[in-house]
Length: 214
Image 1: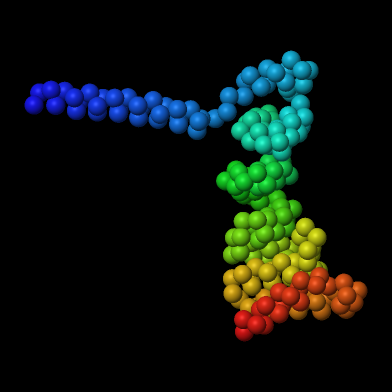
Image 2 (image 1 turned 30 degrees about the vertical axis):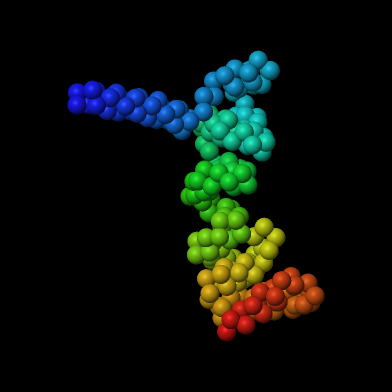
């Protein structure tokens, strides 16, 4: 009986030791990237570590080539050296992170950018929420906010008509009649100034899909 108890205690001890080791390894993986060796390397290559714009560019290139941890750490370091971080800085931080699937970093950066300059950032943010994040409610809210800045003008976030984009968001939310109304505004506006042939052909496709639902 005593031998069995000692054997059980030994197994439990081994298991707890193994768990503790793995827990430490996991914690290390989650910890922030150690940037010092890389900064030392850049310095030895003649990179001016006081040039935050250059460091931002190098950090962006790191993320572009898949070095996400190092790139984000360097961009964050570069931003920390600035007296004032602009909305465009946060926008820049978000773009490649969105493309690489680092969504929490990208969205956090875009939220900060929106706080600083909503008029400048809202067209991209609304567009990227629609196509990449599929957050149709938030996309529509931001697109409406952007459209309200110029009530008598049809904006074109990322080169696409604002009413077409709002129509897509409404369609995904199953607001089919509202979506049709938005598509019609886009078609009518462009047809009256340049002719119907200039309307994006997919507008008619999406309008047809909405009509079929109704």
